[in-house]
Picture 1: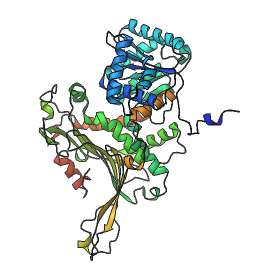
Picture 2: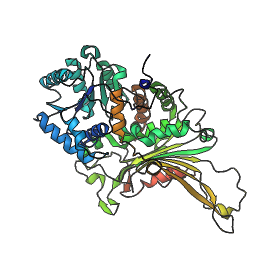
Picture 3: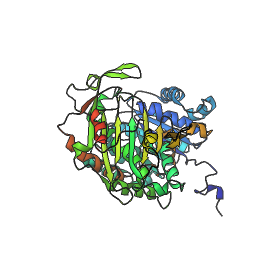
Picture 4: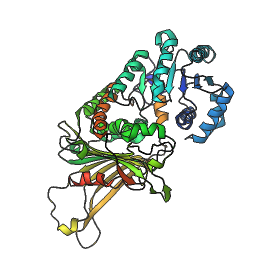
Length: 505
């Protein structure tokens, strides 16, 4: 009889991976230094890594193991979420290794293969390894071909599992995404490919499913009969920083609409899966993505913007065209707003307004479900002037939580009504701090749980939404807006034409 405590359905014991290695390509970049290395320490601090675990860095540096170990120490200590404990790091320190070389250097990848084979014996990792692509998308094909050439991606040859983690953006359009999908699935088996969208690792995003499917309160009104519209906002108060090369070739729609925001839309709109199995959840999300309808007139139902100089948070902010490395005639958007529909019985006729932008007044990501107003209000019109739509607002960041807005009587002798808010905040309701998204996702990769990772079909279907928008926008300049404003005026006008307005985030 098997050990009942090892039942995968039993959550009393934490899930801990098998002995394995995590190979990080591009380990000198911001993502590895600020997110991945701290996440590894935090997982170790929480007791969620196996004793036989190795971090193997690969980058174009002339480092030895000790140099990389010191770099990893400095970055993990600077960015760790959990309290720093030297004894935890001491257990990790002897398991941090480095291989230097370029992506087109056959000898470097041969050394990487030899190192993994040596670690199998010296550190007991077996044949298990996950390869994390913390590198520019343009380098993906080169690294994949090297992994195929050396046999490092072959489960049978290695005598264990070999997985690959691919960061966004996954392609630049449908054609490039398909080509990359074909290449990755050719080198690795399909179930060993993890396309990472860090938004799906956030506790509040996962809570959308808990909110919807663990409660009977919301399901009866989660449809076009009661919902007026849905607004999804991803606002950033920062500019593009040092990412001009990437950003000017990408733009906001490809950078965050194609992945983060369409994934949020899918979670809000999907039908209840038959189980929490990864394939069931992805199947329901894919149905939503396939049902998305674009505006009949794309120029009427979308707005692109580009920030000018202005003031954000009391500080002077330069315009996009003044940023280092941005061409003076760039027409890349730093703001996008779009009206989408979902052509199914639940959501027919309900507009989904999505907006994302840089240099907006503050950083916030939220999903707001706005309900229709009561069909009859037996009050004097002057008493309900301050009454708006009932709203359920899911705050993804930075103040994680859920707000329910509804009408209530103002204390006094008259029947005056106005909106009030019931506010649930993660930090106040739970004693345990929410883990970083990368903690959850790195652990899921090592365990082999693909629930929070979009598959190839989802990625390609998302590009089916974005490509027609990009085609329609070609040759058109984005609308200007001042840094510190909530986007171009045309964005407000787009909703005003339908008798609505953006929720003040």
